[in-house]
View 1 (cartoon, rainbow, N blue to C red):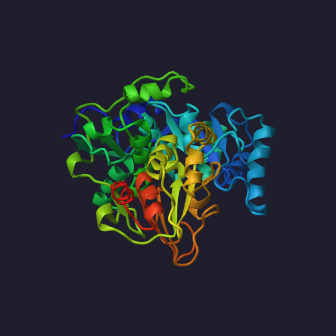
View 2: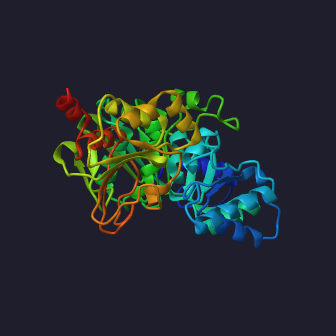
View 3: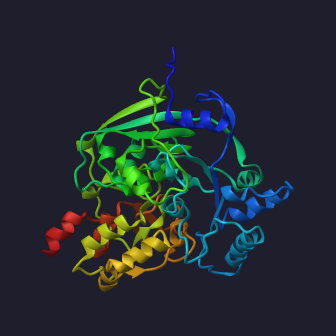
Length: 423
């Protein structure tokens, strides 16, 4: 017999559809925002023009980020289509190169994502906004185009899987380590079309940036969305950012969950996801493979907190002669903060390269593409075959501190190992 309580995702879809719905219900819901980038925007625009209606301008967010600045004529053509659409319809939420950044960081940084909001994004990592208590789902470009004109879309309300991280995490454990551990437990399809809800003292102890990392990588378990109950840290983050009034939202104590996992925080340690699958996880202490490239950035781990951690490891040290370190801030604001805090100078002095915001290398696009046989340890979200370049290249996933430490030794290493050896 089912309880009458609702999960957070059921509450949001009930409100946005105007119906009393539960997991499994098919609903037509009103969206707060729909976001597209330079890759998915062109198909959304084509779909929108077939509707022959005026755009819901206040709901549309346009963020070029994947191939920016444009690397060739094809990418320039895509960006131009997005730009022309924005100017033709006088879109208020268009973020040009130099004024935006990676789409998911911009959506949170600029206050679009708030607790209880329903947001669709034509990118698989839209689930990131669940870190702020929003219900955010990835969709296709054609679906986004329909929302451009109607403001609405149909959805199947997902079931919710709860992960409770019980106890206090070790100071060396970051959000990336937590989510990689969870993915290793359920596999890359274990959360297919579920809402992954993260709770417990371990989550409460993490900052908003680490929570974003966890919600972001719910996609790597096949999830439709993620959710973390907003708290004082959420409120502090949203102060002066949020575009709409919001209120705290949480699942009911008697809500129905598909599955519940209890994880002892003391069992978690820094880990590395081995090439081929985010679910193939090993403790950092058990891996010492040599690397050619170390990459810090993306919508997963390109925030100022991530760059600060990397800079702390790099301070006073040098990148290994046979290794290149690439650091890519996730937004223009993060880049400016890194400059003002002296982090860019510190990274450059260590022998690292810092660029402006772009998705570039994360998807094997440019600015860090791997050649045949090259190995990269990366703070990004995916390491499937050929993800960052040649099909014979290999990508390891780890937190930014581990990536920075590895760049110094030229092989996968923990920060503690670097301190021990260098000192």
